[in-house]
Each structure stands twice: as C-alpha cells, then as structure tokens.
Image (cartoon, rainbow, N blue to C red; front, top):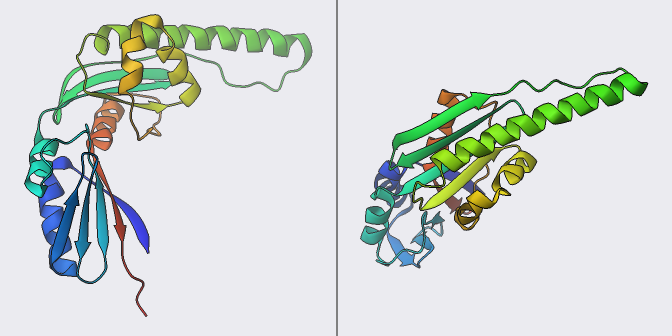
Length: 207
C-alpha cells in the first residue's frame, strides 16, 4: 500500500522518529533530492527534498536543510482574483491580494451572447494584467529560491508569460495548488501547503 503524506518542515524530524518507532530500525539513503528511510518490516518512506539540491547527504543534513529560512514565492491566479506572497521560512514577509469582477457564463444566444463573451474576455484580461503587475512588484525582486503557483493553470501561465517575470520560470516547482479565489487567508494557507514536505510511504499489505 502506498500513500503520500504532507509534513511541515518543523515536524519532519519528529515524523521520522515516529516512523522508526512504528516500523523498526531504519536505514537511510540520502541523495541530493531525496531521503529514503527503509525499515526492518519492509516499509519505506521517501522524502522529497525541497529547495534541492541537498549538499549535506546525511539525515542530520536533511533536517538542517529543511529548517533553513528559504525564500519561497507563492503566486495564485484565478479569473476572480489573485495573490502573491513571499515567505521566508514560515513567515509571510510581503504580500498582495486583489480581486477583479469577471462575469459568469450566460444562456443568452446570438449577438447578445457574443457581446457578453467579449466583455467577459476583456474583464479576464484586465484581471490577469492586474495579477501580472502584482507579481512584478512582489515576486520579481524578491530573490526567491523557489516559486509555487496555484489557481487556474492557464491564468498562471498568462501571467508568467510577461517578459519581466522570465527569471521566475526556472524557479517554479510542484505542487500546483488548487485554491478558491485568493484572499489573504487563502494566500497564507497556500504558503503553508507549499512549504509542506511530501513523503511517499509504502507498507506491506497485511495478510
């Protein structure tokens, strides 16, 4: 049986200790991108190292690495709103959220439907333009180590197409976050979700 769990960086050390307590003595294999814990009962836990590559290839090095105050950017874009934030460790140090009204779909037909669709497209373009300006102001100068995005993929892609954000493209990493229209609380939670460490746990099925 395989499952994926998410753990805050501050809890990784405790989680690994608990894994050993549940499954028996553990051997560790550490690479620049993963830590694999193999327990005596056959269970394994593969930790994806955030902000890779890891340089100290020891379990202690992993803990020190994940607890370092990396600079993480979060960009959330949907038709109805946007948010951008910079997290240094767990602390949100700079952010901006906003909203734009974009009309929903209509059942009207013919000329009215076409006019409505044009108006809706124009509103969406204005919303994405506003999101782009916020990303340029908040994220572009922030000297980020990584960028996590969320919301609507096409909307995010539209924002990141701006030449002023070209340096951010190589910093984008998973996960892509599913979020409602971004408000401040949504942005804060997205930061916590983006910082969380993914661990793939495999256990032998019980007979």
